[in-house]
View: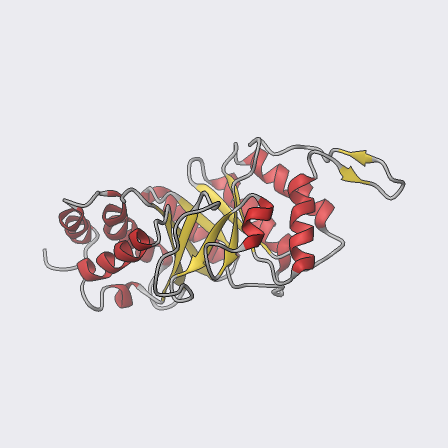
Length: 265
């Protein structure tokens, strides 16, 4: 298998995400993530993340925008459906959702959000569609889970994003899940290159192919290296390794490393 999409997220606040958006779109990354797959009921909340996603939509043109939602507030689902639709409209249909579900109640709220534009049940028993609607007829969505046969994904019509460290040793055959995303946690650009750029990309590609993944998502840590530098590294080294097929990706990754200023000239 070849041709996986590359998406990048960042462990950080609004300024870090906006810096990521600028750098990622400039380097041709496929998508960025607002929020994190393991962040359930965090202090920022869904309202905070949707505001950041809206800001990203306003300053980008092409890159897809993934927004993590945790549904921690039982009273905000209706407003959240309106916010999500507005962001997708502002982004011209570039929004995707990552559903981080801590318990069955969160899954129920996620289901209500996804069906809100077909009809929302009011307190007096009526069922009215929420407006505006998203630009996309069906919003792409993933469930954050530990394995690809997570039943909540099938119930919500979603793909699955799973961390590479959480998955069992053997890959599961593709069944009802149409989209699979492998998530990696990269501490810094130097850690990625600790054993050389080619072995690092080879390992990512091996795992992605083993699990028949459609996408590799990498979350960066903001530290001594600027977000732009890490995005530049990943887009020029990892992206060719994921998209370049089985014959020439090593050469493409090495050329990308040199162009990015890493490795021997």
